[in-house]
Amino acid sequence: MPNLLNYIEESQYDNFYDKPINKLDILALTELSYLPFDNLVPYSFTENGVRLDRLATAFEEAYKNNFPPFSMVTNNRLALLGLLAKSKRFKSIKAFGFVDDYQLEQEKQFSAISYRIDRKTIVTCFRGTDDTIIGWKEDFHMTYMDEIPAQRAASGYLEKLMMQQMGHFYLAGHSKGGNLALYAACQQATDQQDRILAIYPFDSPGLHKKHLEAPSYQAIHQRIFPVIPQNSIVGMMLETPENAQIVQSNTLGILQHISFSWEVDGSDFKLAPALTSDSLQTDQTLKAWTASLTDEELKDFFDLFFGIFIQAGIERFSDITVNPLQKLQEIDRLRKEVAPEEAEMMDKLIRLLFDTRYQIWKDNISTSIPSPELSLPDWRKLFQRTTAENKEN
Image (cartoon, rainbow, N blue to C red; front, top):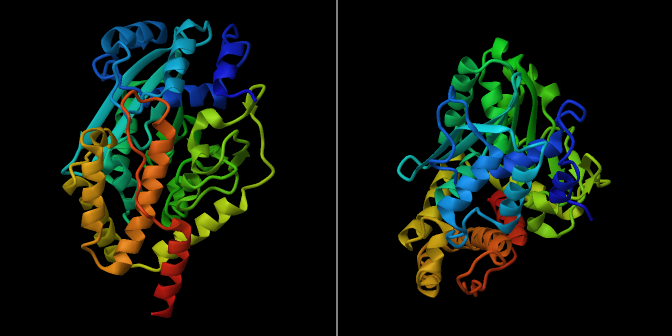
């Protein structure tokens, strides 16, 4: 079935005047936000920016296909950049305002990029969770924190951008990036919110219920257009808008989080009739588990859990490529030192993390990485059991 790459190829001769920008165009630009454009795209909001065709050439010269294993540079994203660079529809789009801010001590992973489509239109895309452990920790912090560092950075980024650039804006992001787009839009002044045409969270966590009740959210909620695959897990976290578009995917399970697996029909996604029972059950158990613990208990648990990875020498998933068996064994040893009930929940999350990252990138890496051979139980059953035990106690 056709996917995003097929759409880009088929629409390469269509200009934005005859065929206005749509959610597939915006998803394509969102996927580019995962690529390392450091020193290739200007940070300044006032500079002219770099055309996508010239950016693709500079990117190839800078990296020469020498990317670390488990990085966010996948074959699909490289193919996408190449297609956009030779497309009459996309090649003259100018990229600017690139920022990539990773700080271990502040537990912050934030990256964003903006594109000028024409004199009156800008698309701003926020990167989702990358291959850093801190990036994953921020995701789980959203279950109990009022504001994570990346959300604060996204709000500041958008505020400065809108002060320095005229015109109207589309905001978007995949995974955590969509949450950042939502949060940033909610934090802007009313006159600036009026300049936002639409917000596209692609399989992204929603916002806390208290944000949904705020006047600033109510002012923009009709311009929010979430897209989630039929077996969504990440996109069901927190409070998801009811108008989410459910789309068909050509793969199964957690791999549906990859937007290149979403099927395309013309200039839109192919619709799915409903979410799968697995998606709904996972959503229920995740929310029941987080609701059964206090904010302090959640903080302590995630500090302990992600601290194990840091102690094992894993700050990024690419770190696993150096002495992989030794590091996996160290994770296994450290988890055995904690209380049994916490160890069970750690088993579940370890399985989720490794299944997600290993399966997504195993076909894109040149280094041979052994699949984790840890005897970990089914993580959804653990959620259900832990939640039931908390209710009994």
